[in-house]
Length: 476
Image (cartoon, rainbow, N blue to C red; front, side, top):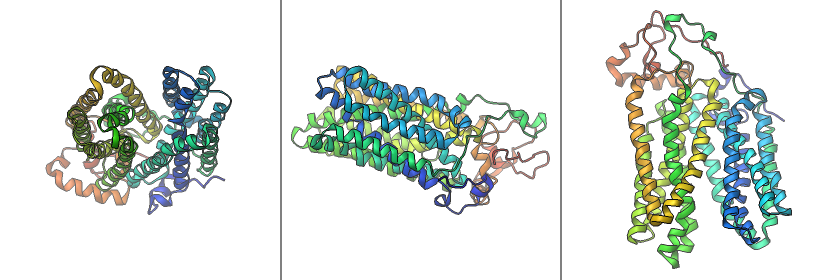
């Protein structure tokens, strides 16, 4: 049974994100869905190989899964507007798990690829819907922590079920894993039924807003506002594709005796660090009242981590240094994930949170797939250390772009009614904003009603200034 949906005004009065109707159900549903995905992720390629299939077909099971995921993510925002979150997420959880029963009957090339594509459709719709829904359910002042908590549930699920699928498959057979994947996904579908009946807000045109013509900010293309956060995620996810694909083999090659035991542990440490630091970045963003504080530092931490991994493998240093590198890279990656998603939410109007979620997920998933492919070619030519070195170079490009975006952002014209503007309407957030005003000094006098609205001015422009009219909240 669905929870009762609250108005936006009622949501903003909630004292905690845990009081938001449907938020816990979303977390449990997402944890279960990612559990189903994690169980089967390493098992399906292995089952293909054990059945006599080629390594190309084994790799294609993941490739076609991700291709279907990305294509579905492009279409999901429209489905969320027309159909609603609950039906889309329930269908997505069903499609992610139940088709896995088809693996029981055959893992020959054509059937296994068709089933993988069907499951990719479910995964794509789910990943977009869950990130956007969190922004719809919780007060904006808790959005950072809520997004971070979503990462915690995803991370814990992956840490638990990734090794479990292989262990159960080895002991009891792969058929048991397929059945478990379907059952866990059905649990996710049932939890989705407890989510309030909501639809993503329709796209809004400038003419809907009650502003004089001379006070309206020019409309800005969405890609201009989300490009750099997207590339920040992609630069780290490309490198993560190499880490997840080649680090276990590199560890075993570096230390054949100890490496076999450490390979899986290091990947778990990477995921655990990502989970913890993603939540930490959300806490910082909520306290600051604005995302981006830890973005550049997180990118640098990820860079140092992957450089240490590359140097350790190249020079044959102690395998234990890889753990330090894994913590730095995983922690930096987790913080960048959250900062990028929150930045997109803050830069775009509330009516486009589903687009922000879709763009973020596409940047993440496409980056992981492209990184595995391209850096795999590099690894074939320059060994594993060369692949990680190339990954470090990609992160450097991401850092340069983020720094440039930070500078240009002081003069970026943005759209009204985004999350950052809405924070000024929340009493708790206003106190945080007042602290930001005190350190900006003379800049708070620069806002003039006839000037275009600048990103920083959304925080500093006083609502009572003559000629400034608070925009009506049409999304509530």
